[in-house]
Length: 215
Image (cartoon, rainbow, N blue to C red):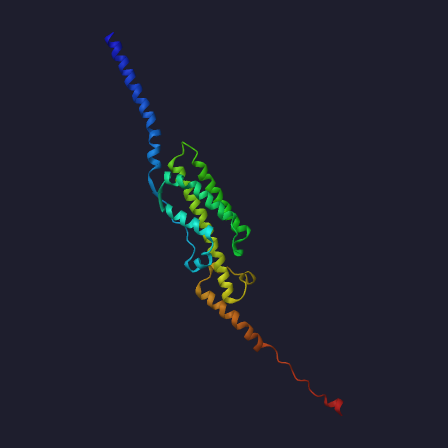
């Protein structure tokens, strides 16, 4: 009887230990969601172009919002996901400047919107992991960075065309791959070509008198 009681106690002890070990991973989920993580920086709009978008309220609101997440925990991100979703929707529905009202730019906004919707869906998943939240947050940052990169490219092209007075799509050049020397050289060439044309035009010969017909 004594040995049977001891054996029963051992069984209960090890059973409780195994059960405790199995529940530990689940209990550790919540602390991980509270660990602060540093995220990659959002690609910014070039300082020389900020004035061009200073009145684009929807775009600037998202930039300010994402600036909060340079550092943050998964819980903090999830608690702000629905607000971010609303801001992205406002950008998608907003009246965009003519330069950016095209299919390529709208595609980038749709990608950002889809990534934000996935993050918002995560708020209703009780078993979501911190790693999943962090990964989705980085996707959103990358998607918004792609929008800012497109803005820089479009405004760079416009500024270059304004400088030389010729559409680079007509010339067949990529302004984003030009250095200052190339820009200056092309600018000078475009300005000189009309002058050269005038100088190099063949002079009209004066009609000569036909002496034979005069006689």
